[in-house]
Image 1: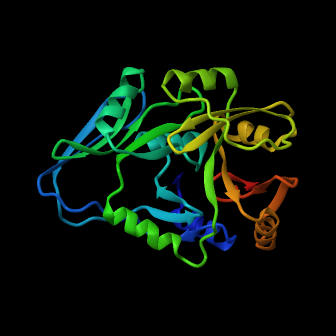
Image 2: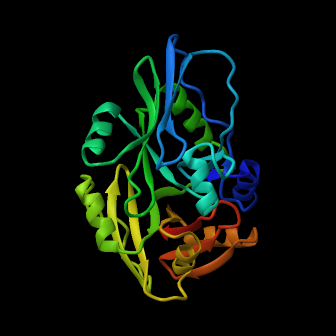
Length: 293
């Protein structure tokens, strides 16, 4: 999640009983040699490449909120010139502009997406090995895909510790709701990239919305097209255009989770026995949808 005020967002999710602030991500084990960053200042401009010697001081900028089994990275940037993420913030305000996936073969998967026409817009490497990148998959849905190598011992230990925190809810991330102008074009685009249809969300009454679900790694991208101007998802689209509108979590006790959040000041937008949509956009511009397991 790209934001202007990291601490405000961390405080928001913790104060409503939804997430727990767990600090910055752990650094990868030190590897002596040369690091390299390639990034675009603007997505319509030319890339900048910065090479450096690994090691030395590191200033942590990111904060992370553990929301169920999802680690939400919250990264502060200044809107305006400087980097394409700042360009995004200036245009749309705070929100989630990319989803990071671990992959056992980052070079192979990166090349597959590049061959499908997805530009590489950020790449971090150490001694020629990619440790993170962003690929431009914004054509429909305005979401980028980020790839990282498989999580190592440091990262897995950190996550295990986070999940054992007594205030972390037993929620399972199913996916993300993404509002789009055209569901068919968005779905076809991701199918062409090689991702499958994956309607894993159980059937539930959810009026005035057209939906299509694509499996992207371990989660679902649910493309949403409101059919009624009064829909909260239409409000998301009107305010920010296409993009990620909500988290989708599976919970064991929907009624209890609704009660916990509403007691902490969160407004319940819509619900029935199978789902609830909650107004959590105060910081970060994202709703929360809970699904009864």
